[in-house]
Structure formats: C-alpha cells, structure tokens
Image (cartoon, rainbow, N blue to C red; front, top):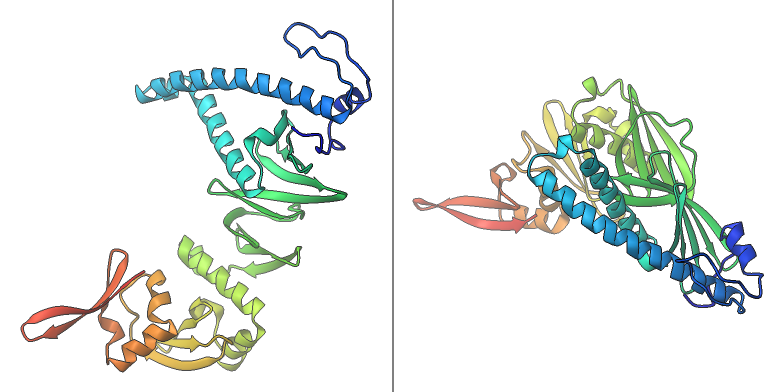
Length: 343
C-alpha cells in the first residue's frame, strides 16, 4: 500500500487512528509499531493486519476445502453440512473474483471484508465498497475516485457479473431471464419488463405476454421480447412491419440488424437490410433452411446471400453439420459438398 491511498471512506475507527502521532504496544499478535506518518502508517498497519489474517484464513480454507472435497468424492456431500457450506463459500469467492476483474480490481486491493461489505483501495487511491445483500451476494457498488463518487448496482446472471447504473427494482416483478451489457429482462405471469439503459438512465419497457400462447419455451419467449425491443428502438422498422404491413409481433420470427423473418399466408418472408436498416431485397420461402438460428446470421448476411443467389443454390438444401453449414449437389452419381461455412 502506498501513501497515495484515499481513506475518506474507511470506517471511523481507522480514520481516527490516523490522527494519533504514536501508538503503544498492542495485544499479542497485533502489529506493534509507531505510527507517525499519518496515512502511510495507517495503511501499512491495515495492510499488515489484513494480510496476516487473510494468510491464516487462506491456510484454513485450503485445508478445509481439501477435506470436504474428499468427502464429496466419496459420496458424503448430502451428509456433511460443512462440505455444502464450504462449496457455497467457494462459489461465492469465485463470483467475487469475477466481479473484481470487471471492476479492474485485484485481490490484494481488498483491505476490509465484513458481513455487510467488501472494501478495496487501489494504489492510485480509488476506493470501492461492494455491499452485500441478505444472502451475502454483492448487490451495490460505491466508487470514489478523486472527488467523484459513483453508485452502481451489480446483477449476476449465470454466475457472471454485470454492472449497471443504480436503479430501483421495487416495482419489478418476476424472474430475470436475460442480462446483457445494457439491459435486464424480467418475466412475470402475463407480463415482462425490459430495463434498457440509455445514457446511464433506465427505461422500463412493459410487454404484455397474453398473446404469446402458453409463454412457449425459453427461445421463443426471449425472441418475442427481443422483437418488441427492436421495434421500440427502431421506429422505422415498427412503421414498416406493424403499421404498413399489418403484422402482429407474434408473427415475426426474428428481427436482427441485417435481416427480418416473419410468417404470412403460410409462407416465410425474409427482408434483407443494409447498413442503414433499409430493405435491399425480399425473399419468399415455403420453408426455412434446416439449420439453427445462429446459422441464419450467416445465410442472410449480404455477402453470403449474394453468393448463394449468384450460384443458383436453393436455401432448402442447406444442412447443418455440428458447428458448420453445408450445401451439397448431385454431380454425376455422387453427392458433393460445394459450399461449407463455419458458424
């Protein structure tokens, strides 16, 4: 720890300690030294004490985890409460390490760890306080850098942390089904709420799910929500599809940045878009290519689409082979693969 650390957010007992010109002898096991250099002495004291405590704890945790892992491998996980608790703690620590990476922190920057929060102080003087929720998971973050203080919230999705501007979840109901850099999707019975962040401000997009029969499966649900989001963000597409063509959102299979697929009169229509979201081509199909949706992004990209048309290939004949799509033709008495793309 250097003497450039900012300690304005340290607990009161540590701040008051920095005002003393000297300290007497401490109890056995605590650092005994004279603190005459204010902040430098204070940070050296905290660093030494935390390092010592962390070292002892780390030895204990490694030993306990090794023992518990042995119990787990021998089938005693359900009978050993200590194993479950240590496994939960291990997973929490793993998630914390990921959050530290997102925040640009290192484990050595951690100076205080309590039931309520973690406190970090970097060599550049940035102070970060990570508050925990009732379950011990990180839920909010306070960052103090120079004279600027920023408050953010953290949301874990599939054990990966996402950091957002602070917002209230008080009126949000349901389960989180999707999280990305600038959005969180909540789904409740009959209604979904998409929280979209624009210029550090949240926008709450409410979506009625009654027209989506039985809520269907996860892919269909998230695709339906994504269509609503895309139409909300792009007024021109909404005017084209909903107002001019009279489509219902549930009839649109997919809206992406480069193409749109929807169903009309038992046929599929593919609208190909240019960089300005203008339609440059429209294709009718009786059935869609027998590939997954990720492969659509390749087939309906402008370069690949133009190549397919120029060579007279039929979209119906494309097949998927693991992480590749391929097109085969009959040449003589043999079936030959004439085009192959990796997804």
